Image (cartoon, rainbow, N blue to C red; front, side, top):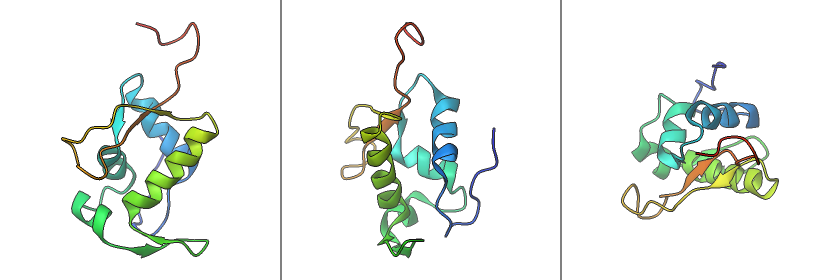
Length: 107
């Protein structure tokens, strides 16, 4: 597995995000688990409540930054949405996975 962004103030690259999803494929990965994998030094509470300034001028929490990035990757067809897991988190219970490719990954 590739080296992930260990510095909390650096956003992960698309390749790092996709590598975490690939590691768990074909399962869905909750946003909470993606945050933990990409920023191992940040608690979930901090990831969803502590606003940071990101490159490009965006100010948001790490969880919100990642949710926005995953939304863009979804729109580009690179990430599929999983079920919304309200039990995981009532506000940020999003789950994601790599898109299924015809003839591959079917169970």
